[in-house]
Length: 101
Image (cartoon, helix red, strand yellow):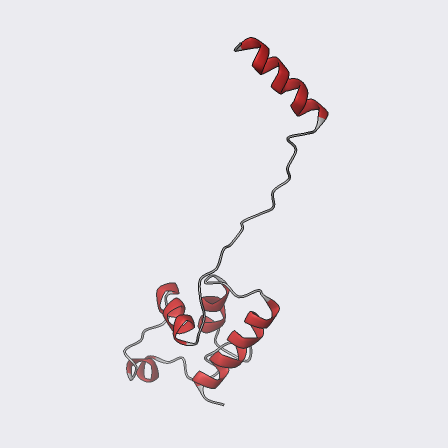
């Protein structure tokens, strides 16, 4: 399988699992060996043919992802817990309102 095929296969798997990100793909691209995009080809002469150098930067990986029908979507760095009706929050709210009335 060629580089484009390996890229598409891995990118497709990540998209299907909804675990694709601009942080994850560069890790795959820059991994040399069985689990990475460059299994044997990551040498300067090979990359120079395409105007690339190693490591491949995140911006380049993002560009490749966009060319392969990737798209930006919302991202959350954590989770949100809505506590605005918890007893301690209600008590604090009343204190605040009384103080600033």
